[in-house]
Length: 112
Length: 119
Image 1 (cartoon, chains in turn brown, yellow):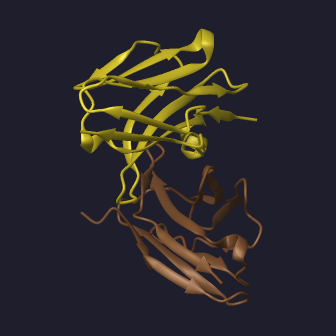
Image 2 (image 1 turned 135 degrees about the vertical axis):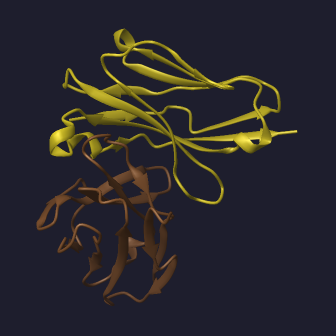
């Protein structure tokens, strides 16, 4: 009963480094998304996907890339990390029938 | 544009007190969904409830109850006889309807209310 799996749980990067946050779901959900959580700001949508091959921007997309080559996976790429990207990142998925969002356990990212 | 306001940043209560968390929303959509999520100190996000805009009936689940009032654009959450395990950050969220396009899954979150329940 894995649900939504995010890796890694913790990551420290230096400014300018690149990395990919992994997200996988085993519920055959069409919809997947990435949020970032910052103190006092709640969760904000970065990118989302309504199916394999289809992605779109959310509220705060700058500095992040996504792709959706399979239904199961939705990785988030930071091409050149900046201190402003220090945050907790949550991946989520849902199916269109129920519209309930299931969240992963989060990735705590620090950019020095 | 959608907006969710949780004006209470932090609330402290003593165990067994009742506590209400406020949520006010703004949307131009006539059909939408409202959510509450709980984030305990461990950090995960736990789904509590979803209501659609057509259903204004109040909901009760154990010690939890929700009061949805379209007239005031509010969706308040009450915990009766609070317990230490209720200590968490609680988020209210809003999404458009339109399940077939996935728009119902694009949530706009409030900034959260941190609830501290002490003995």
